[in-house]
Amino acid sequence: MNTFVEIFTQNGVAQSILMLSLTILLGILANKIKIGSISLGVTWILFVGIIIGHFQIFQEDAKVLTFIKEFGLILFVYAVGSQCGANFFSSLKNGGLSLNILAFGLVLLNVLVTFGLSVFSGTDLPSMTGLMSGAVTNTPGLGAAQQTYTDITGNDASFIAAGYAIAYPMGVIGVVIIFVLLRKLCVDKNVVKDTEETKDVIKAVSMKVSNPESTGVSLASLKHTIGEQFVITRLCHSESNEIEMPTAQTELHLDDKICVVATESVLKKVEKYVGECIDMDMKRWEKLDTRFVSKRLLVTQSNIDGKTIGSLKANDIFGLNLSRVIRSGVTMTPADSFKLQLGDTLVAVGSEDAVRKFALYIGNAPKKLNNPYLLPIFLGIFVGVFFGMIPFHIPGIPQPVKLGLAGGPLIVAILLNRFGYKMRIVTYATSSALRMLQELGIAMFLAAVGLSSGKIFWATLVEHGAMWFLYGTLITMLPIAIIATIGRWVFKLDLLQILGLVSGATTNPAALAFANESDDTGKVSLSYATVYPLSMLLRIMAGQFLILLFF
Image 1 (cartoon, one colour):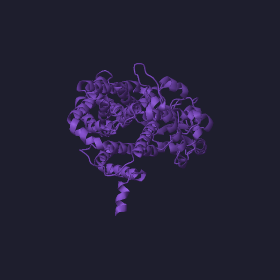
Image 2 (spheres, rainbow, N blue to C red):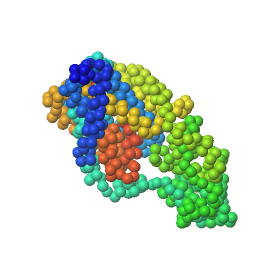
Image 3 (cartoon, rainbow, N blue to C red):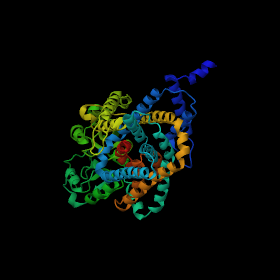
Image 4 (cartoon, rainbow, N blue to C red):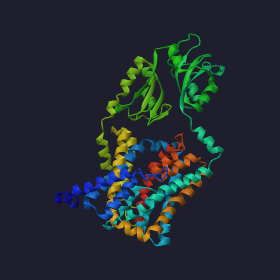
């Protein structure tokens, strides 16, 4: 019996890992507790850690907990950067700039409200920074603030997490309350129209050439005239009734039949120039000529990573057409400038032999992607941590600024994921692998934070609880209300874009889940992904900035 008690009461590495594992286990089980459809999610781990830490059920090793906290944070932000890196730069081109400007405005307003409340109430900025991190549900920002405080003072920064824990519940619920109000205030004809327009999916339609102006026009000229992305995968000449694989030089003639793949809005433009849609499905095309097949092929060759679709010369070299490209479940028209990544799926249309040769060229070996690429992960972590430790000076701030263990790996992950192919670095990781890194990292971080801050949480709650809860509510709701109003009336965003913007700018997955319940278009998730990387970086730097202002 004494041996059993000693296992849990001795101070050591094993006891710390036991305590950490129990905290994460109970936190995951508590995740099933919901208020309506809302759950605090992984944050339950933090609250379980606070309870265990408060009652000092186990003896922990402070150094072990510190290492676990920091390494967990690194894993989390690196996985986030790897997940968003490929789409971050491209999102800035297609309406993403205005969304990111609004996201920057939301972060700035959160900082200004936090600073104003600190001046008004006399509460120290480090504690208010913890409140702000909880109010916007941003855990890496909390980690960055704690690290900056410790770097400057050499003292323990666990007290900052107390404010985080007090403000976090309203950080989730407050956003949902605003979403409910926005749904009631923003439902109008424009929103319905915008929502319908987002249902513009890729599909194949058969058309008949009946416009005399299209006679003798090459497909290359037709694409140039229309100015949109579409693919003509098959062509049946009216004279011979034979099907051929069209190329850029193929000319159209009256009564020719073509199979066009594009979004519905683009198909309408093609129909206007070509002639009319006809009732001819893919089965009828296949019956006319059995030489052509349509197959989905997976990009698994590392030398294809980063290449554009145009550079593959699928039509010129292999004699086939690419009708679709699928990435992360999203189907797109294969533009020549589209840069491929490992894991992309290409839909190829051509002869059996041509498709087979093209499949060998791009890989099409699914098992190959199951092999973990550990080198880029640890290379990215090494460079990211090193980069995060480099101090740089900002005019007007006496202390040097560091990106820290949160900002450094995040930036390097984004850059490596986007430009790694230029250095022959394979950065591919399956969605499940990145998700596992993300969940494991955040669980380790929250458990360590909760255990280390549990000793002072109750005293802080008794002394400041009501007022800090109010401050956290103001930090959450006031900036969102302002940015939502500006986004709606100045930037002319629709409801779904605003919901995605706010969810991403507050890095709030619970808010995203709630918003997605009423969205069958994917527009909320697209806006979320557009602003999330920049918002995460700004949140990390905002926490550091407020700590530096204190000194």
